[in-house]
Image (cartoon, rainbow, N blue to C red; front, side):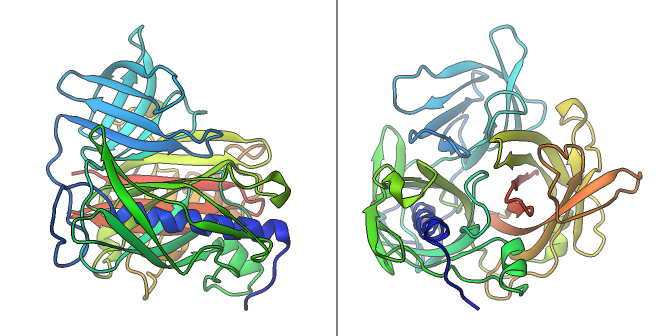
Length: 434
């Protein structure tokens, strides 16, 4: 049952949906340079080059500036940093212990960061040690057209969601035949599984009470400097529609459906109670057919677990590996790498329980659970929904979450978020390895 929320809680719900809505926008606006729309859905990514550049932003960044990241495998170099503001890019050489893991080296030759890349599509960048927030970034070389009305699935990046706020959602995007004009519609945003269990007394997601955005609105795709993005400025509604403000939004999406969305709230006054200067969401295009969960869970993945403590604004990011092993029911096993060395086998200290796939949304598992080691009760695992013991007898922490799975050119991408009773968020981003 839907219920009224306080102005503070309402404003969160209202604004986030807009951001996510636009996210989908981008999803439709990836690269490819095609002048005719494909017959159905997204066009799919072209072959990756030796040099690939991506646009994104750190999770819960205090800045409105987008980031760029470039991996040059022909010269074994990298660069990353804000796209505006005059801050010099961070540069250096790379080592690639596996085909998709990139170690960023500093001037002294020591590790100064990590990245997991799907060359030509997207990258998860950690610009520093395990306390640095992740940058989720996508490559979109030019505007492209999509065929029909494409559904996009997303979750909010860590630190941008909490109790009674939008947590995950879906949106549809359509384009003109040349991909320059976009139209978005039918966005739906949901609160976290913890909230719709405790507050709604249901295991079915509850739609956000007030969407906070137009039922449909347009956007424009432009290309500059070898990169494209989709831009719009929809209205965000606050105080149950009493006040509204334009929220400039940018989307970047790969032609296979991976996408990033950035939305600025600089026009929203502090009196509305909106706590974030900008919002970002990460997502995937909906697969064309229901996924076989056993196939998804047994594939081999590498990526990052991104944890966030709301009260202290502390981050923790760890390189993790999952899958590539028999599945028990719908449970996928995985964990951290010893010394963050991806050439070793991951320690089995985590698991993802998919449970059933949403019959209305291919690739969405809203009854999922994420289990990690209960190794930081004072900062990250002190408000878990349940605790247990691992096979080795160590304490574990389990929270309810939502899994979204994209199928890009036959390769899975998993973006999962879970939350505890305090609103602390865990986000798992995994790219399938070939």
